[in-house]
Amino acid sequence: MASSPQIREDPALVSTPAASLVVVAERDPGIGTAPYASPVPNWSLRIPALDGLRGIAILLVLMRHSIFGMETHSKWLSVLLAAGQLSWSGVDLFFVLSGFLIGGILLDARNSPNYFKTFYIRRAYRIFPLYFAVTALFLFRHLPFHIFPGSLGDHSPLLIPAAAYLTLTQNVWMASLGWFGPTAMQATWSLAVEEQFYLTAPLLIRKIRPRRMVAALISVIVTAPLLRMLLHYKFTHGSFACYVLMPCRADALCLGVLAALLVRNPKFWQQLCAKRALLWWSTGIFLVGIAWMTYKGYDPFSSPMNAVGYSWIALFYTGCLLLAVSTARGWSHRLLCGPGLKGLGAIAYCSYLIHMPLILAGRRVLQSLAHAWPTSTWLVGGLLGVAATLVIASLSWEYFEKPLLRRGHRYTY
Image (cartoon, rainbow, N blue to C red; front, side):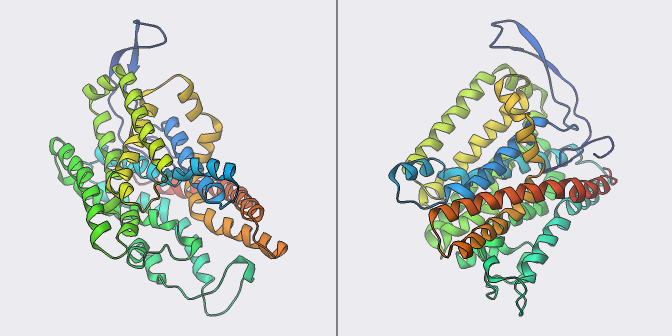
């Protein structure tokens, strides 16, 4: 771990100046009307519950690609699979978390003389080494000569140029093609979205006064669904572009930043803790809406999803985030802070990068052995790929990512 001050920086360590400690009185529903002290978290320290939320996010993504995307002719199994069809929204939870964590770092360090230098050096240490290692392996498969056996994938030319992956602009190419590109690298669209967010957020947070920032963030949150509707109806592959372009997903990112800004306000924090029951009810209402979208079977590219669906999901995850940071007891806190979800959260970045090629490899190896593509091969191959993902990601976190993070945290704000 980095030396003090420690930082909660996407899926690993981050560090910011310590937040002031404010004690507020709130009513504990388990004690009736008796007040108890609820301190504002020290935002310079790691919040375990957010690791748990990150673990939920990667778990949803892994389940989507290994289980819930399965095709079946069984009536009952299809009902069970339909119940998890919105598991693709795990990436939206990643966006809200990134906005909250990165926005918080930038808000706390906005007056630092090393603001830009430290932020981008730390981001580079966190993102680039692992990303470029995985990308190099992927691009190596697409050289003009064959190295890997056919069971690990085809060797067709890249429709999305290698330069797009190297510059993290592949989501723009995907939007123009209406296609994710080769399966092994399709998940990297969201990484491109976050990197493009990192290019714009530091400058805006540095230049916009805090009093005006709430209005600016709300403007982006409101504008994003309007932009999605415009693209959906007026442009070729518009519904696909709504899914992969950064401005179209900026509502989730900015909701995270807005949450980070608000919880640093002592008055808001006091109200948040004092009226947490209202937050539970509000988040529950958003959950009912998600259940309705699941029942209606809206896919990621449908007009209802483009109009309000993405924003609705982002609001639900923002509610979950606020509950996570404001709840210091109870079943939800124990669940998020348990070793299982926290462990998944720690290895989420590598897991996200490598899970698709490993799932694909597992399925194709089994297919070559079985000389068929039955449902069981698809499912078992996917689960084997997930298992391999978790093993490799754990090793990567321990021996590759953490040492690099320590080096990045030598640079201070």
